[in-house]
Length: 269
Image (cartoon, rainbow, N blue to C red; front, side, top):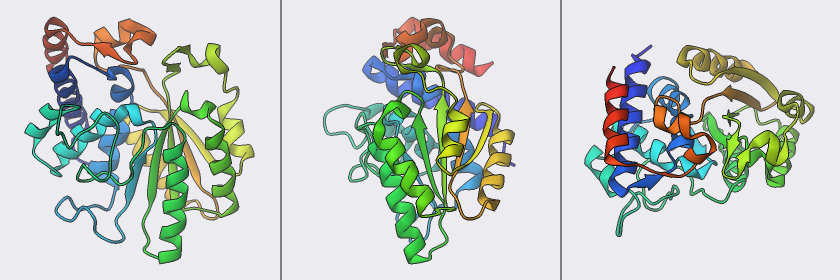
């Protein structure tokens, strides 16, 4: 396995740098999925940055659209486009809009942003891959706050009905959303039991342990006849102390020069 720890640090640095370039952004929800992004793009997925639209490639659809900057940083680190382009995040004329857009950004497999819809798209892409017989694995990431959307559960039901064993989903269980703690806004209850009841193969792991993520993906790939959900226990703002200390406030936050420089020193240790 590659040095995913170093890659995670690099992705965090690139993500924070791009958000700092515009002074504000979704620091918390970006940092909580860095390990799964690094594991997918640098260890698991059948992809080729020189042929980003290659038929039969594995695909990732990030339904929790606020995490776009982390996805862009990962793509840049993987060689899909120059790292310098990250400094254009959300600026006029950019190819890196606030939410992922497959028509603008090289390497983005599906436009997302409206919560719940990306997950439905992932189900559709998995069906298409099955029909094409291309052998691709379709990955998708949703948020725990996003899981309050009814569309998530409609898609979950249909994916199980279609026995989409080529679909591997992750829930970023960082326990926070824009308005407060998930349990206080609208509790998800026993999420493991819910996904099991909907006919999915379910695992729960430490979402910041790349080796555990790798092992869970391999188990999911071996599961036949049903889709897989991997619940990631994560920390919103992971790796960046000022974001963690902000709690719910790190959903979208201003980033000062002092905070940026302090965080970069922290990540370099």
